[in-house]
Image (cartoon, rainbow, N blue to C red; front, side, top):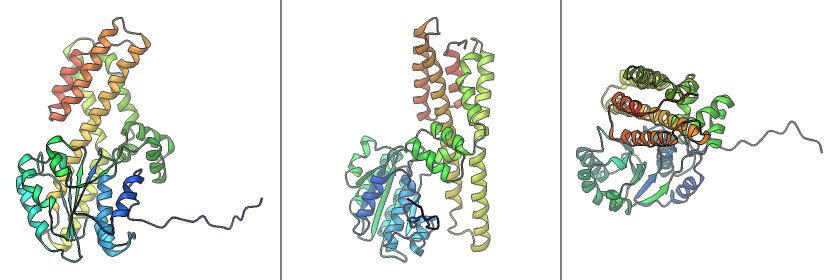
Length: 361
């Protein structure tokens, strides 16, 4: 059979959903709902599952009425610049009572340009009880022109009443094969894409950062070999913790570069259009949250690698006292849980390493 080498492969048309990776069920449900949307949607899934990208994509589809990312309303919504799409991120530890008042006020206003207004509420799992009480009625019965898109990493029990008023769309961690394919499509080498996907644990946003991190393998090796540098002394613990935290600080370089580019673009817009309504404060707050999340992600990944070293020793039977390896793994899991309470990272690591046994590999 001969092949016609002059025949071009058919290229799929661009879609508002192109940035929503590895979530076919979610995209299918949202596409089916877009022409006759209900008042509130709850997107639940871990960080990096592209639920944030899906919120803008759904907003774009709602306002444009078509699946065309180049249509004006869609283009502006996808860029986070449409006047009828407002995005709320927490200021401080949680979405506050004052932010809830502003959300309620905006929900009651008519759209500026479109026949709909979309309010996107991020990190809703951190909503304060006072803000939840304020928002319940508005989310349950907003004006006909307002659609809520609520994003949460998980849904805590005390917010189940609000959740019950929404259409829930679940987002799953993205499997490694999809992350690898996505990164390769973005120009990353196959080897680095595979390494980043393994370290990112289903988080595409983190995988993209790690794909530009030339020290990823060395950082993972540093955590993996930490037990070999412990000798029961405080000086060894202090030196090891300083080295680990130094590597984590250096790992933020790609994120800092991206933040610097965003600040430069923001300053150019302010110079051209003025600071009013520029979103400068929101950008600063987002950068702080992203850097904090990056550090916590790095610590989680590093501690998981550290636990893996003791687990491998336990399986291999290379420790004189197997119970000490099991106890070490338990202590590391305790430290992982403690990260949710925003501890002093240096003290957390020092206290942990002082309790861990030495390994001779």
